[in-house]
Image 1 (cartoon, one colour):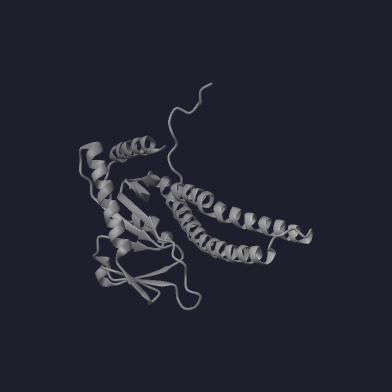
Image 2: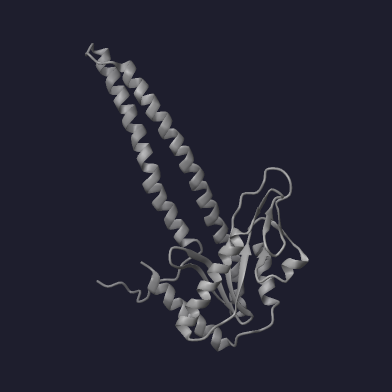
Length: 254
């Protein structure tokens, strides 16, 4: 019997991150849980032997088990923190994907979770108003104060505490990679727009940021930003680029 599906499906928002979560849970969480269960069973067994006057030392075994359980619980707590971060990232990518799906009504081609060489591009939008490479950063908001990010065109100041340029470097690198991918696939070089989106955050952009190559936005504003740009691609170009990118994504799936 053969599958009725001829081609592999395109990726959903956060698909690789979701797969990573499941692999992480299987690899990291199962081992300490099995360790806890083993130590508990060993302790119970030793107490039973002590009750029946067998020559064992349940106190020593209890101490060993207690130390092991404490170490494993600490590891489980770290794993839970990591899983929470991964799930938050997954939810962020999915929420951004939902906003981008609105652009299909105006003829845009939207792709999610594009596999690269050791990394993934969160989203690519091919629209008559341009090609957009979008990275999602789902940062936790502060318990107190305003959840605001100040963008000066060169760096990001997050909640008045952390200043970093790493996300800008990342999205520029991803954009260069996509540009090279399309060049190798189509034989033509296209201008691409790198975009950083921060779900749930208020973005304050300086005058210098307005001149920057990178957009930094709340994802709710992104569809309007794209639709307000001047047309750059004819409909046949949009279709051609989407076809090449679709082929690449399908060929990259395991």
